[in-house]
Image (cartoon, rainbow, N blue to C red):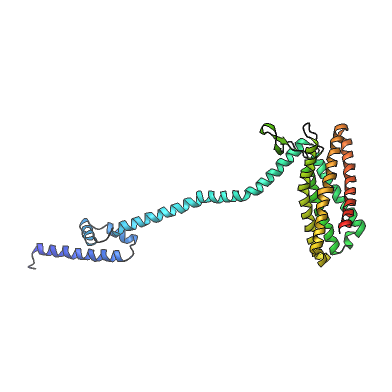
Length: 320
């Protein structure tokens, strides 16, 4: 064609360089795809040199920038996966464990307290179960005798009966639980040499070191425990029954009287009577055999229930 060979070769190189520069510029402006990266990787060495020269203004070639982006995404994905599979699950598990700690501690405390009481008195469970069952039966007989069969009860009578059962159930358990002897020592103050003296569970608990003052202090301590409980129980009962008794049950003066009845009944009457029951139980199981001692404690607790009911009625009549 009359054109020198070296001229035609230079023009082909220049045209190829412009083409690669255009492709590279478009690649940097648009989103790079894996197909484009593979195509750029397969170009001849000369073409890659022109592409590198054309894209020298960029911080990184598109293929390397894409590679770093992918590696960062992969690291983030792995971190999320590890968090889901490892530490995140552990943190959630620890959070659930912390939520269960109060409940688990309460159950453990009750189990330990029961074990201590049974270790100190192997008849504790028998006394507790019999006390609760006996009180519930007495309430049933009393309510049936005064109100007739349950099928003829009004809504108010049914609510009153349920309230009596619930109140007696919890009061009996609290009285038996906190007046029972325990194997573990209870701290009641520091003695000589910084040692702690063993507190009395009830006034008549056998002890070689307890004085009259210690036994009197035991009664006072139990009063301070049971009096607020009796006050709270009486007020709660009055509030519940206020729905059926009308506005009179919500009168502040009436509520104060009801609270006073509950405080005296549980703090003074029940406290004193159950202290004495625990004392005679010690005597029964010391001088009688097991069957005779059980029969004696059943009889004593039955008399205690009757006397307690009479005293409660008398107290209510005097205050209310």
